[in-house]
Structures are given as structure tokens and as C-alpha cells.
Image (cartoon, rainbow, N blue to C red):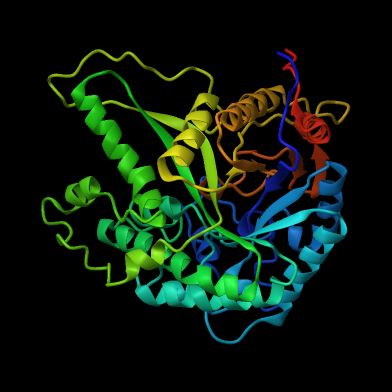
Length: 455
């Protein structure tokens, strides 16, 4: 395959989140977060670990920025820890917390790296959780106050803002499935939490615009591409339901369509929820649909849906490949292409960024200290080629952020998964760029995707 160029100005970056890398969980006035509480609860994290130290980025940020510059990153997506800024969620501002992010932003800009700031990547102040958390409407109000504080402080330098990362995870993974903090398994509360996250997004957008004139404002949603296992009507129904549950429930309201009628009907049938969802108040849907400048897209894999109970089902014609990451997620670059095309042409979105895309492989240093992570290079090549094809199809894709800059605390999986293009030795905090980091640096320099050379 010949080298394929990306458009001039295409932005190349990497992403992290505060709880996964910062550590310093009790330093400089920071309050407790729901992830601090969750990880200190026995049995919640697979390896019993916490983010107390993680990658110690709070103390090593300057070295990490220098490493980003060495790798040629043009942009860096990171999140703010809400309890560093407002230790109890509302009220007095912790200036030491703001100072940390001021230093980080200034350091990035001095290195020629554009900051993309995510206001919320899951570390809710525990004090707000104690008052009900996201299922309570007041938490959406508190988020707007927090967004106001942060954007007033950083808005003179930060020109790209993301309100929330992955509302599906905040609402459903955390309150219905219970895998993430706060670990609830309460279906009505999960939908209420999801709604209040989206509502807080809509309420915050005009506040951010007022504090940061000319800045871009968006939200990041996570997607799993849904495909039917067979051409049967039963599998088609299962696929549509999954797509509504995972994808449309969040995308439709952000783009002015309200909650999908088929999903409202499915959720309210049987009396689990009132026919008119009682957490939705007048004006909410209009607020959620506040005009944004871009959509952040997080993509990792697809789901193949099969109705195992249907008597009239057909034999499966689509099965997952054996090519999976160590998260047991199928490697499926075609899904990213289809997703980007669907989002642009289905929702008329003016600009898209891939704000997360990556893979977990445990390749470590060899005897010479080198890390030859060829599987990650192949993964990235396939997904960047999908991005290039989407651009050729007319999708206004403006940039790509690899997940993740460095190995880090992977939520309920603890330190058992390594998504980074930089290896982290958690005992010494040594950083070692993997072969994929240098490969990515070369892609950035060329602004083009080279042929994939077999290992």
C-alpha cells in the first residue's frame, strides 16, 4: 500500500485521565473522589490496587510533557480532577489544585502542544456522592459551578473543552452494571444518572462559551458498533436494542432528537419506570441539545448480537475473529470507519475527533530494554487507515488521540492491562517509549500512514 497522507492541519495527540495517572490522592487539599472510595473497598478492583500513586503524574508532569514533545505529539487530551478543584464538589476553591493545572497547561503550550481539557472523566467528589451522586439533579447543578470555576481559570489559554467522557459509562456501567464507581446496580437510578450527566453537559456549554470566547466545546461519547449475527428478524431486533441502549440513547438527545422512542417504550414497558420518565423536566431536552462545535468519538470494538431465545432464529453468518486484545476485545478497524461515516451523515455533525482509540497488550522490555509491541502498531495502522478512509468519504475528522499516552490504572482491571504507547514501571516510575510510540512519531512527522511492514 502506498503512503497515505492526512489533511494539512490534522491534529495528532494522545489521551489520559486524571485518576488513572495523577496519584497524589490526598495531597495539596484534594478531596476524596468516588474512585478513591471505590478502590479502597475490598473486592472492587481485580488486583486489589488503587490509583493512590498510579503514574505519579502529579509530581512528574514536567517530564511527561517533555516526553510528549520528544514523541512529536501536537495535542494532549487530559482531564481535571473535580475534587482537586472543589474538594467537596461545591463551595470553596482549592487554589493548589488549580495551580497544578495552570502549570500543566503552561508547560504544554511552551512545548507547542495543544491542550484538550475534559472536565469530567469519572472522579466525582465523594461528598456529592454522599448526597445522592449523579442520580440526583443537584449534581448537574454542581457540575456547572465546577465548569465555571475551571474555565474561568484556564479559558484564556485552553481553546478546546470536552464536558464529559463517556456518559454511558458514568450512567450505566457505574449504576446499572456496577463495574465502576460507585458500583450501583439500580436500573432507574442508572437512567436518571445518565440524564443528569447529559443535562449538566447542556447547561455547561453556554457557561464555557461565556468564559472562553472563541473556544471549541464538545462532548465525548463512547461507541460499540452493533452488528447482527444473522439476517434473522430476531437478531435484527437484538441489534437495534443494543444500539439504542449503548449508542442512540446518548447521541440522539445531544443532537436534538430526544430519547429514542423505541428505547423509551422498551424501558418503560412492565412498570419498572414511569411511562413519562420522571427525571426529565420541561426544558431539559432543549438544554441537552445545546449547540456544540465537535463530537469526541471513543471506539475500541464491535458487538455481534444474537437472540439465543428466539425459536425462529437463523444460523449465524457473522462471528467475531480470533484477533483480540488482552481486554478480550475484538480488533475490528472496519467498525471505526462505519461509525465515523454514520455519525457524520446520520447526525450532520460539523466536526469529529477520535478522542480515544487503542489496545491493551502486555509487551514489556526485552534484555536490551526495548519494547517491540508489533501488535499495537498493527492495531493503530488498521484504525488510522479507517480514519483515512472516512476522510476520503467526506467525514470532517479533525484529529486522532491515541489511548493512551502511558500505561496506567485501568479502572476495575487495576494494573493488569497496559494500553500505553509508553511503558511505565510502577515500582520505579520509569517511562520507556515502546516501538509503537516511535512508529506514531513517524506518522505524525509525515502526516501520513506508511505501509504496514510485517514483523
